[in-house]
Image (cartoon, rainbow, N blue to C red):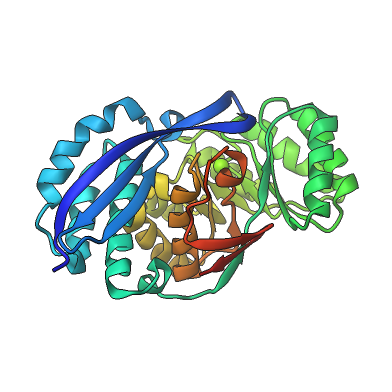
Length: 343
Ligand SMILES: [Mg+2]
């Protein structure tokens, strides 16, 4: 029988290959939580929470204290009734990344039990996706050098972090474009600009003949009016990331006509809200990308399975496991440069 017998929370620490610099934040590594769901029949499901204080207000130190509560709530539930697990975890609003990890670990255990992959439980829409790779904030020269290497090694989509210095950011885009013509660009300001700066940046880039495929979170998370202002005064599609954590955030963004794109991250939304956002976005004709926090291959596997299963995403920014140092690759997928394939 596939009833839940035990749930374990295990702390893990990962270092970045090199410190990862985004607007107003530098990380050397990440303390993540691995969640293991044990069934009575010996099957184990794996999930991972990569917390973000900046985006979700989470502190990893609080996670272990949630383990007895989660265990008490979930032990005895038949894994086939996984929606019941989703509903219980939806109420744990203090820890969205833990919600994601537990919900995914439940799906992972169920998929093992029935001999399918999680992406198939979620619909099996695609066999293959392609990820971008992210260039953190650095000198103009170093960012251009990295873009050139990435483009030559086969990454056709490049994500570029900006948002600290408007004038330098424009020079960065010029230098990167010079060495990667034909690449698609996702430009992420991580809330760093004022609306005025965000519009200036977009117009300056457009005037130089450079195209941006997704212009991510140019302004503060709470500034929905600002997002809308940028959307209507910029030639590039504007995406919400920090502004779009839950299904309710996305409902508001759609109602207010504030964005062209939403960046879904399981660490913000869990599986349940992410599924709701996919349906809302499809209905409202908003485009979707999927991103990550600081997940290892265990956590990136969650987003890979979600993206393959729903087939919902125009862009995939699933590269944190390529930037973190890990002893062993543990994803249930195949990685070949930017290509990610179902196993
Ligand atoms: Mg972002």
